[in-house]
Amino acid sequence: MTVRIYGFNWETYTQRVMPAFKLWLTQKDESQIYTLYTQTRCFREEHFLPPAMQPLRTWSRAQTFVQQLPQGPQTQREYALLCSAETFTDLSDSYVHKHPPQLYQNIDALRAVWGAIVAEYCLSCFLIPHTDAQIEISSPQNKLEETEASRSEIISLLESAGLHELAREIQDQSLDEDWSADEQEDEEEEAALAMHGIELGRHPATLHLRGWLATISVRAMALFELLACGRRCLPFGYRAGEPYEDFVGYLTPDEVWQFSRCLRLTQAPDAHKVEADYAVFHQAQSFKMIDEILPSHAENLLTIIHQAAQHGLGLLCSS
Image (cartoon, rainbow, N blue to C red; front, side):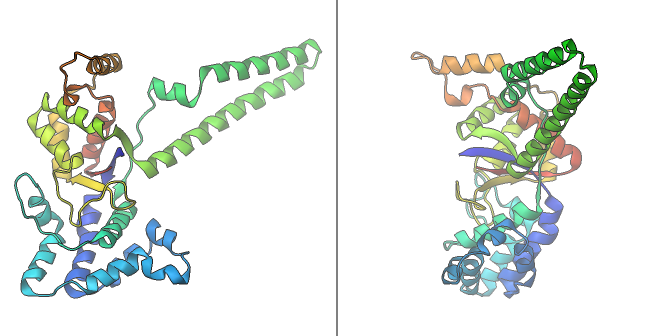
């Protein structure tokens, strides 16, 4: 499972998304939540299911589930706490509160509705500048040199034949094509990042990052646990690897600001040291624990934390 981090629009979440869920759960008023849900990718994907499969749609199953929820004074208070973003956040640290507000039944459809709406309305994605390694992967040097050599040969042949104007036109056209290709590549990459968030690697990478943060600041480590390690409960739970159900944790804008302050003087480990550290870990007689390996995605984490803090956003993690 790949861990990804997104900017989290906390204002939209607290003022639009969770109030709509509160109306739905406490008053059975689904008008607002349905309006939000119909604009999601999940709704569009399931819109083309054949009539025989309509009862299997996420919305149909969630609707049935909510209609069957018990309605009493105690459960009403529980639903209200569950749908108050600020209050729920205060109670969501599973290391401190053993019984945060929750629905005890199987709520996968409701969780998917929540995740689809959050993904549609609350994600703010950041673009991280290329590293040298990324540039090398996306544009191999050998291929570039071969292309330039071929163009140079053609232009030289045309000039030797006295066709100087044609050679100049081909040279100008080549420059325009290079520029257009670069622009198209940048646009495609931006679209991919906007859809997939900022990658922190596969699941063991969270252990590397948590251990590294622990050497810098205990608070930074704890905030990372709330974000990416399952320490924070979510209103409708979490299920790894399932579309729209795989959000594992979040941080509020205030928590992101604290996180950024903890790491304001921190620099990511050198790539060569990371590789060497990983090699030592795999040696037969190494006494290193996996939590002690230097992280390879620290630069991504630092970048998105500082950018989110600068823009007053929270952070949301999926895995």
